[in-house]
Length: 158
Image (tube, rainbow, N blue to C red; front, side, top):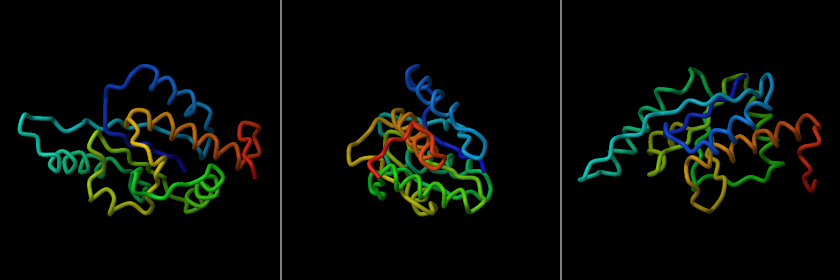
């Protein structure tokens, strides 16, 4: 099943696009990773952060392919080692459903996105720019694929 990265933001630096594309290109067959960019909510002078998150959340939820297993990326989620991610990725793909990763905008994910996810994954306790998350996610998925298929890229401690 194809993996989908649904990310809020449509204007990212060229190095982000290049980095994401490099790792996504390396992922074959059932590990193929497709990016869908979600238009951010419009900021106003009297910006209501919850409104922004709600609007972006609705756009993300509408973009999820039908019957997907959804993983939200959020600092409140469970951190994984690369080896644990490989195990989880194998299990997620084993469900036989498309896999959708949700990345929020500058304000994070809405409660609806978090509530609708089957899993919540924290890449780091650090706050990362949401554009950088695209590259880190793609690289870690490639590393997990490498570990699962015995490729030399992954040289873990296990």
